[in-house]
Length: 526
Image (cartoon, rainbow, N blue to C red; front, side):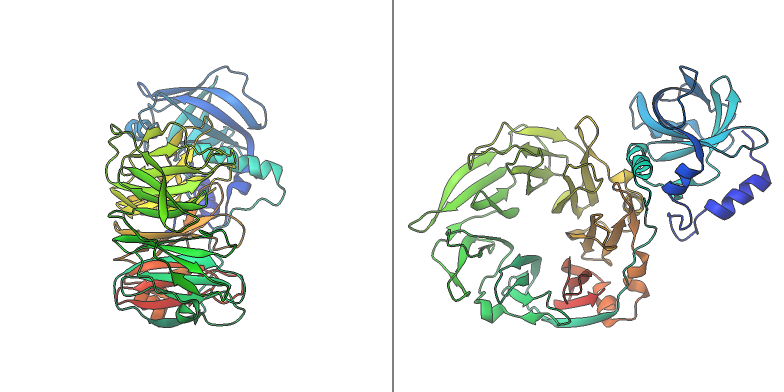
């Protein structure tokens, strides 16, 4: 395939993104749809002897081709290796692809591009249903870094919505910083709890030296410490909030590394520890479920419920299949993954997960379903969200070895889609997010309802991303701590013990709170 120099320079001036990033700031999927005469969803076979064949599955724009089969010829490609194309199929015999044929011809010849997996291929029409394939000269990966599967959804969005947009940057910047004090012992995490009433929303930092709580979200006010006012005396490695005694007030459950205990709120709003503690040696996740508590360990989870007369009793023990062999981990995400109204439990390990389908009866679950996938060396944090806007919950996992994104395809099959997430996947592949992630938090940096995630690392700056739509993420370069002169940014950028993205000052804009490596609780206001 031949592209003239003039054509390439013209396209480069319009389309090619700056070298500092993987997102083109001037051209999005909306523009790609506008400039295409035909957009087809194809089922393409893996390359063999320098050729690929495909059949049209659906015409998104324009009409389907008259030919029943299309052929893509790689034999004369100058800058596209067949092995690289084969890698886009990830070992499968065929894959979904999106073919975009340009309205503008080159030398009287139709030209276009096709995405397979996350690989874009440039095309020139050779006639009779044959297209000559080569490297994509327009660098459309900078326009869409997600997969072809996600691109189908993105194009559908453009066709449905006249104002469809795909943000190219985070709108947020850091405007101020501050410090809330220093913690003496190791920090284990952050938990946000809405107690209601005068206390309202609190952010609790878990520490071996004693948990501390700050009231947040008050308009134009700095977070105020309310540890003593709440009566918080726990020293937690894990914490969960719930109404454990049925009095309508939110209580706290805490695991300190040895015991699981409760702090119940009285009529005065203060917490008071009760003698309900039970010995627990291992707690990977502590969560509220069915009015009780879920405690996860490496081999499954146990449900506890407080008895009317006091004391925590075992409601159920749910073990993972003994032959699952999923490796390290054991963190649990509690959510309604199958949309039947009952919370399910997903227990995530290094090499896959076990899904326990919930039921209307507390403590009873369907037979466990084991899914084996290569995820990461050891999960340390899980965050649920519908990142690809398909109406189904996804799970982002972070820990030793980076991150993984558990999503479902059109057939309901779970897959690790982290490589299909644009700059997030690219950063992970280049180890720009570090290999020791200690926490993850939900975020929405552009305030557009597109869910994203912030990652916290003990050795590097936080990884902050915005969602362009359909689980294609961009790096929030406007929030780079390395480029900020704020003291908190410099300290947090050296590594964190824990962190969260929350509205600290009531302006409805996300802020960043993190505990630095020296135990100082610092924040950055957006």
